[in-house]
Structures are given as structure tokens and as C-alpha cells.
Image 1 (cartoon, helix red, strand yellow):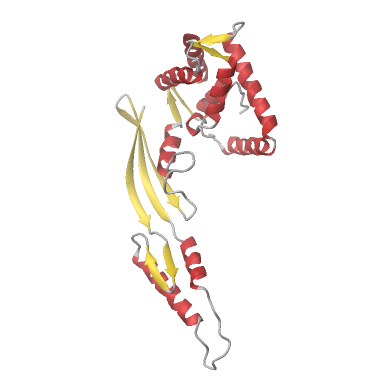
Image 2: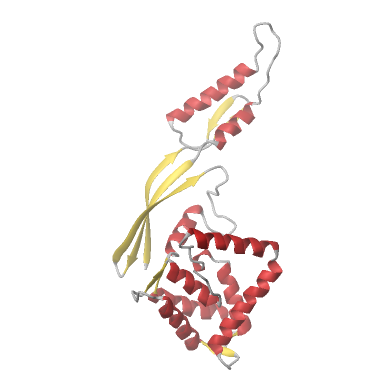
Length: 261
């Protein structure tokens, strides 16, 4: 599966900074917003003057007024995302990213820009069987820390933990009820992380025992086979694609979890 992204439209302007009564524009601005800046400047100037009687002087900080104006400004970009399978476009969708002053324009702490996060989220909404096969091969390579060709329970637990930190390995909630449940689970994990980690480890241990049987390790071929068996069991319509409920259940099954839906 391939993902292509096209910039469809761009609107808005950069923040206007007012210092010492002068406006400086950091990015191209729409004419209407230039007028707003002029109004702010005029109000700031007028507010520092005296009234006709020379009394009751009202002072207004131009910086505070500029902050208020800045907080109302946004940048907006619309992208067309295309999903291609075997050279054929199977999905085309437009999505809009709205930036405000708190939105990271550059890479975040997770190493992704806002646009990269958008692409990653879109790409993670669908999984083909071929991609699942490639995932399984990569998973085993990452997990097999000592490169002995076998995966231990500890190595699998570390692999599962890395999935929780990766947005591409956490399927989007297909409905509001599931989304609310996720928020609740995240809240519980935040207030009691130790208990949450114990539960996560228990899920991973149970999953590993299911894959390994009576053995203490899992071979590369066995892991890949079990991974694809999970895929096939979740592919209810047998179209070799997982999305929505199917993908959500598959990701949970990989970790040894169950989801009631």
C-alpha cells in the first residue's frame, strides 16, 4: 500500500507581533488582517491619550492587545491523501490541518511534524495482508536483541511496549464509544501507571505463552505464522484488508488484549 499527499489549499496568515506600537508581520497576511492590526495600533495609541479635560488617562498595553489578536489567528492547510494498492487508487480523501499558536510547526518531541502525523494517522487506518507480513518480519528483527534467531518472553514484552509508543501501531477508534473507552483507560493508566504496566505485562505474557506453547522461545517462522493467523481471524469479510473494527481488534490481539465491542 502506498500513500500520496497533495497540498490542496492554504489559507490564513502568520501571527502579527506588535512591539513599541509598530506591527511586524512574520508571514504573508490577508488584507483584512492587516486592517485589524491597524485598528489595534490606533486603539493602543488612542487609549494612552488624555480625554478632553486632561484627566482619567487610561493606559492599555499594546503587547496585550497584540496577544489577543494573535490568539485569534490561524493557519489552515487542506491536503488530499490517496491510498494506492497494487498501483490502483482505492481511497482519496481531503483532510484539513488547522494551526494555532500552540501547534508545533516543526518536529515534535516524538520526531514528527504535524503533516507527518497526519500522514501517519491516515496510513494507519488500513492494513493489507502483505503489510502485516512485512510488519511481522520487522517486529521479529527488532525484538531479537541478542540475534540468536529466537524470541523470548522478555523480548516480546519489550516489543509490545514499543507498539504502545507508536501511533502507527494503534488503530483509530471506529466509533465514539470506543474512543471514550480509550480515554478512560488512558486516564486510569495515568493515575496509576504501575498497575497499568502490570496489566500490560500480563497481557503480553499470556500472548507469548499462546504463541510458544510449552517452549520458552518462539522462532521467526512461528512468530510470522501466528501474526498472519491473527490477521486472517480478524479479516471477517476476507478482502485481505483490515480497517475499522477489524484493525482495532487485530492490534489488540497482537498485544494479547481483548476488546468488547
